[in-house]
Length: 485
Image (cartoon, rainbow, N blue to C red; front, side):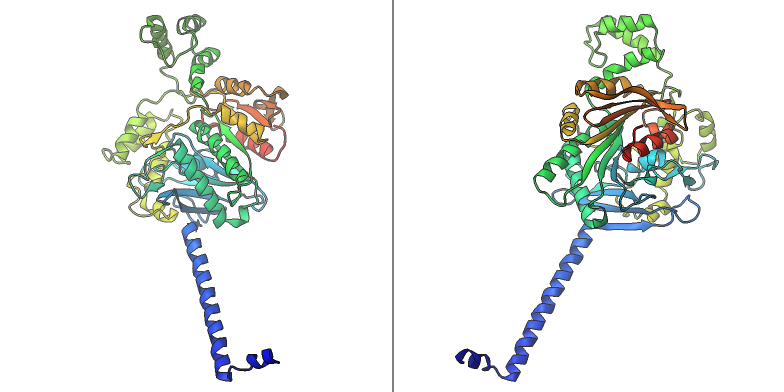
């Protein structure tokens, strides 16, 4: 009874005051929680949905999101991205992070020239006086996969550093920033946290992607959240090891670009090492001069095309303001119409147009000029070979698709097959053709016990989907759906 009496001691006015205090503190706590959640969201997200793009007629018939994610220890690196939802089943289809090579090539290059839902309209008769036209790509990989196209490392495309220190980068910093980006992006897009995740890219991406995949594995196993549901990776004509460059001469011989006699002399005098030549080895140097003369008119990234000697100079003059884009534009295109890459000029003009920058949500003053590939990045190449990374990832059971456009002299299929063989995993499906539309040979393929599939793409260059979009889409769709090529 004493306890009950003590509970009755407060007056009605005191009880009301106590209840009001509880209510006040409850509302204050709720407000603080809401503010914290709001600030977290603002910290994670600076993105917008794009319904219209200059150059494309009408609203976009697919989901496009662009934005920045702050990464790094001080979050002073702002990585820009383009996100396209799958047209099939975005809730269940894989989420793929696409990284272009270089290092320093923009994710826009992968989106518009390789595997994305848009491409430049080559029938537009562009004359330099307007924004280049865009049309749909019927062979976009986004028909079966959600894809984030990212501008990485910092300084690439529309990505930028807030300080001079933040703008300095290298392989390990790039991987750290990509991992930070992916975890923050998943926090801001929780609907995709359970989707299978794949890493993909081509060319120099053969270095950062295996390193990134291994770091994701280490952190997942260490309990870092949110976990990334990594299932595998896709690499096209990937630079993997410095020895890749020694396969250019055997490839040139196999493609009938040099004679039997020169090839035998090169093998004898250079002893199979063609990149780090002893200056005192005069015979090897003489053979190399003969080799360079033979391939002087060949496009190194696409041997079916001639080398374009004037294009890079014109592009540089335009970028640096010494030549207007419309100046002699038609004569330039006429002179360079045989170049497989003259359309690269279109992205330069398109991405630097003020209306395009406004549509994409580019922050004013962060990029004076946009480059498709910025090869002047202050980038430290901390890793030169990823063969051991491939072995480690294979041992963890990850799937991988490694494909080679078979008309790339720079990173050719001989080099790629060599490092794959060095992993020493048994063959489970030996060398055979793969087809599109029944009996049209699209390339050749081989599969291994480590869940690695190797495929060539017949008639394609260094960035294979750029040259053979239909075949590459068929290859990717079958592989991502766990079907044999």
